[in-house]
Image (cartoon, rainbow, N blue to C red):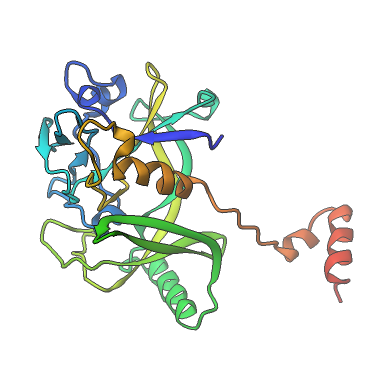
Length: 290
């Protein structure tokens, strides 16, 4: 079920009188940055909500973002501090209603995965994992999944400015190391209440994406603002939304990045504890246990 399209919310979908029903119930203005969105340049407000980009009106060359005070504000097309809160629409099928779950009476759905929140170095368990990941990264023994996440920062002269994050697999889980080139600020903090430290390696956990489900429109809206740094620079007057670099990023790079990498790591010991059929399989593949 990976045949889907990504877009941004429209002004009408967040306006108080015409907003999507699930946004009326959850407060359309309120969404929280992931740590990745903070590390890629977005401003996290002190009340933990953040600004996020909306679809532009290209005929009038107007660009908008959702303000944390629950109103829509105009922005410059090359602004990159607003976060991206994507909307997902399956093209050939509706979502499986059996996979819905409810949190604070809101219908939610998990689909795809993305690096979102950091391992917390102030937590003893996470700290141990950070040390192990960093050591293995430095001695080049950390297993790559083969997947690279794309982060887009607009045009640099004639060439697009793109940065990639490499995904690693360790102890059954996926992680991505990321360093920020942005300085610390008293209003840009991560989920562990730490101000961003430039050039420090942060380990982000690759986790399932949680979506709010709007039953009336059969749409999924990302619960969190996932990433930032993307603007609308490549726009020609009169062109539609599909001509913008934001749309290209969403449906060329982010769409692909949402699809989970397939990592299989066999656990021989658990197989040996299973049935005779599994034991025969293990013996044949790995040799009889001596």
